[in-house]
Image (tube, rainbow, N blue to C red; front, side, top):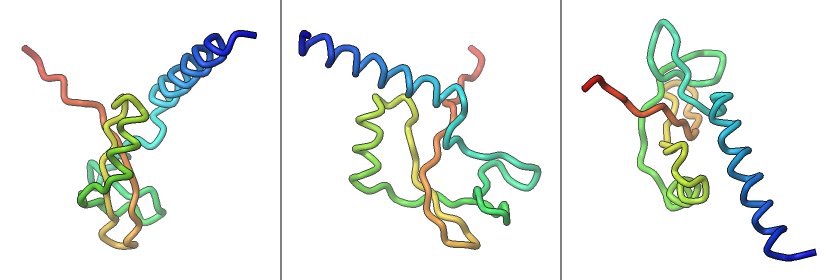
Length: 92
């Protein structure tokens, strides 16, 4: 068939998968009673922001900045991860 059709369908499916993953809160910041941004490990310790690297900017670029991933590091287990959060939409 037409190559343009395959590319268009691929892009549409990719965007739909990104939207579904966002609705399912995939890789979103976890909130618990102890802190607003907790490590996904069993300890539930707070995460600290660390500097982004080029791969993080590339991931934000290929996800059309739907997520705005930020890089974090656990204060206890030293695990590094990417998390996103919904932007603040304060009242006018």
